[in-house]
Length: 79
Image (tube, rainbow, N blue to C red; front, side):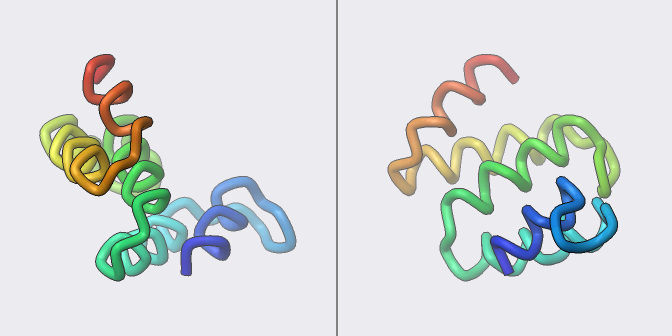
């Protein structure tokens, strides 16, 4: 789900579809993939494929940081 979500975000191998990418990244996030958590947080922060929700983005960045993802701490500070 993670890589397909990324491919749909950037239009690699398939047409771009941010809404479907968000669904796939949500699945990967729920499965514990910290990279998916970061990407999903970014989508919420920017409103790409999902409704813009900075509070949800912050929560996801925080969760990624708890999972050991350093990018989560950095993004949290900038969010």
